Amino acid sequence: MKEEPSLAFETELVAISGVSHVIGVDEVGRGCLAGDVFSGAVCFRSKVYSSHESAQEIYKSHPWLRAIKDSKLLTRMARKYLYGELTGRLDVEQLGADVAFSLGRASSAEIDQINILQATFLSMARAIVGLLMQPFMKATTPDDVIAVIVDGKLPLSPFAWVKAWEEVGISDPPKLLSKPKIKADASCLSVAVASVLAKEARDIYAETLLESAYPGYGFAKHKGYGTKAHLQALNKLGPTHVHRYSFSPVARLKNQSL
Image (cartoon, rainbow, N blue to C red):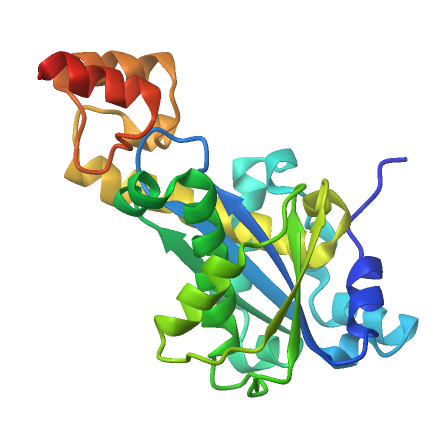
């Protein structure tokens, strides 16, 4: 039987001395040729981890969470429904008693400037900072430890962590404990929820903002990924301001036009 996302890893981390929050993060759009890279950040409240029974209570309060899994395994209809439950249909204060969430992003210009890996980390760090700055979150101090579960092999960049806090005027941020975990979006509930949040938010961004601003490129369909149709539009119309000039298919077209 295929493993379903759970709070097991989050529960291990919240027990570490000094850890005040455990946050799951995931990104979407890293491989696109155009547009921002998005990240979602999700944090379940400490009371959820106090016992197995308490962890099960969140499913009673929010039964839609049982349908959460890695966003790549969900149909678009299912993802839209879950995104709506998370961001709109539930009372925010009621939801905030159990789980907090936020989105972060980094632009195509930032991707070209600092590279896609560091820009992805920056979008993750911005999502985390946005989450921790919410008024109903417990205030953090420089002595607090924020445990971050990152989907994949690499830990969150300290550069991105410091920069994201500096952007909100904080030069002495809480400590970062980054925990990379392969396929965390399939095993950790916080990361799985973050995956759905980021994936649907970026799809909406591509279908609305990018599609309307740059007609003819087909952003509503390919979302900025390097599909055959996207490459054909690039060859015909040329790259836009939201294309990533550090990515070889776009860079090649730019060089040809010089």
